[in-house]
Length: 85
Image (cartoon, rainbow, N blue to C red):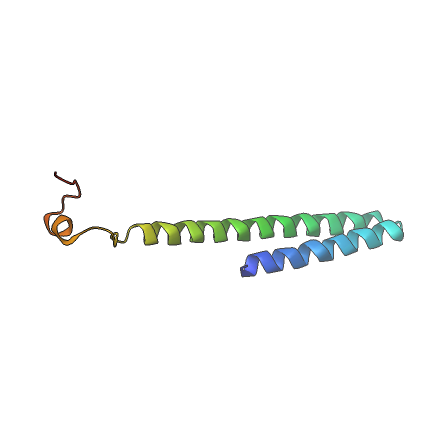
C-alpha cells in the first residue's frame, strides 16, 4: 500500500463522515462537500492502486528478463537454446 492509497482512503472516510453529518443536520452544502471529498479520495486511492500495479508489472518484467537458470552450459555458450539430437 502506497501513500496515495492511504491518503485516498482517509479522504474517502472523512468525506463519508462529512456527507453523513450534512444529512443528519439537513445541511446540503456539507453533503455536497463531503461527497466531493469522498469522490476525490476514491480517485486518489484508485490512482495509488494503479501505481502499485504498474510497479509490480515492472518488477515482474525485470525478473523475467534475467537469464534462465535451467539452460545448460553448451546452450549458454552458443547462444542457441535449441536442442539437437
